[in-house]
Amino acid sequence: MSNQRQQKPTLTGQRFKTRKRDEKEKFDPSQFQESIIQGLNQTGTDLEAVAKFLDASGAKLDYRRYAETLFDILVAGGMLAPGGSLSDEVTCTEVCLFKAQEDMETMQAYAQVFNKLIRRYKYLEKGFEEEIKKLLLFLKGFTESERNKLAMLTGILLANSNISASILSSLFNENLVKEGVSASFAVKLFKSWLSEKDISSVAPSLRKVGMDNRLMELFPANKRSCEHFSKYFTDAGLKELSDFARNQQSIGARKELQKELQEQMSRGDSLKDIIAYIREEIKKNNISEQTMIGLIWFSVMSSVEWNKKEELVTEQAIKLLKQYSPLLKAFQKIVVLLYKADVLSEEAILKWYNEAHLAKGKSVFLEQMKKFVEWLKNAEEGKPFNGDLG
Image 1 (spheres, rainbow, N blue to C red):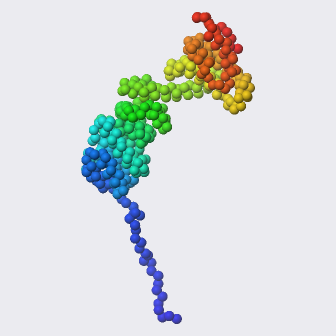
Image 2 (cartoon, rainbow, N blue to C red; image 1 turned 30 degrees about the vertical axis):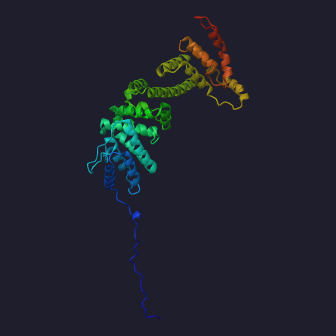
Image 3 (cartoon, rainbow, N blue to C red; image 1 turned 90 degrees about the horizontal axis):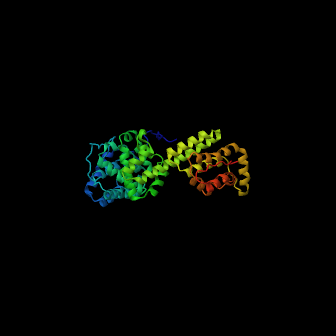
């Protein structure tokens, strides 16, 4: 047996060297801000030099961590406190959007700086959009000139698809709307956007994020009408935007009207009530007579799912007539009554009869309307229609 004592195990543990990248850094935007501001001040007002500096600095500075600070500096010259005022903690820079000249050429140059930066560092894209949303909420804290520059820049960025039109949701903030800040900012923004792209390009961008039907929200509830919107933006030189908004409201109104008509017909409401409703809607939403006839027709014919086989459509239409005969009979009379009440013109009815209707199931109904349409074509001036539609 060995006389040597067996060495007992110790509990001192083992030291591991921690790599720097595994250490959790302290969030310190002030040091990051000093580095960015120092570099921007050295570039002067040369925006090409600014873009090159930002491109190179991304390899040394943590843009991902301090994205908000970076964008605050590039827009306002320093970190922004809640509400939009500049923080007094660190020196600011004059090389920023808010200190630049207030003209489209300069704003386009700044848009290029942001565009190059985000293309180089793709992960900044989301943070940049969030920054724009925040800046719009801070509008009351900015001067009129600063708002104008931000509006022009935002319009250019939207035109170039650098940001989504969803950022406009910030303009629906109650306080901004109440004080008229949202509407006046929107004028500058859309003027900038429409100077770069036409309304046919702007409209899809708005529709994509559901902003096409929300533009009225730029105004307080008591001014949220198509008439007020149209006058405000037309007077500001944005008639194309006014026309677009009016068209969008008309589309929405037609959808609601069609839904209501279907419900009224399903309930079997009286012709008197239906006609009164139709006349009110035509006047209120400026719906054309031709469109109205189409809506009535579609409301009836959409109550059934049509067979894909064309040869079975007529049979299905007859079945539909039998099933909904009281409803369809009422519909036949609506056209005549609306004509007699001077709600629908002869021209609108004839145009609809000849071309503006759905193909499926039309033959049965059009045959029933034939007598009235022939009378319209041949009747002498002032002679009333006394025929029976059957």
